[in-house]
Image (cartoon, rainbow, N blue to C red; front, side, top):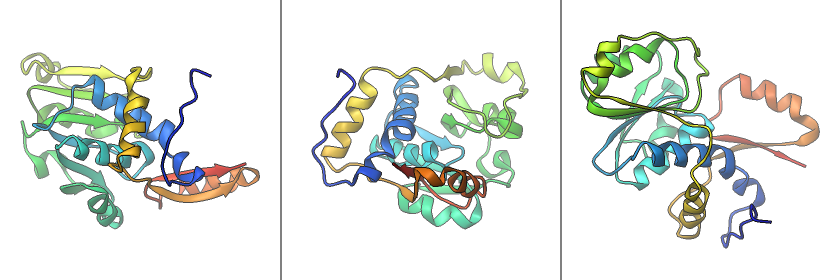
Length: 207
């Protein structure tokens, strides 16, 4: 019963179902990395559930938000609140430059990992809650210690993360990014559709 929270809003059950995993993970990453209005935030995987939630939650904090997405999804990222988009297959370091990002919110990892630490400013931060691009990475340790960069891993939520989300919903400060719903009996179809990576936001299974 301690994990049940009443929410007074006009969202549908399916829309509310987008919140716990995606938005909870995102809010927690921003909390533990001390995200604030002075930050320029780079978001990887910004068209997915966690990434698209992070666009909204970082913008809610007053940040300058840069989203990494495919070209065909760039308009959705802007509509969600991104100030700028960078295409996923571009040279990120060339596009953004060194020491240009205060906080990288990453769920991808992969080949761009080393460049993230070139782009992070001195005393900047990096936070991760996933590695869908490739969990095995390498980077120059000098970029870490010479710039006093802080690294955060994120799995367990801070207690106030979900309470914050309930407040944002009640105050109308975030909106659900529900891409598509599937019946639970069609979970295989949902997985196949998910793997096509054509969506922006979240899929929800309906019992």
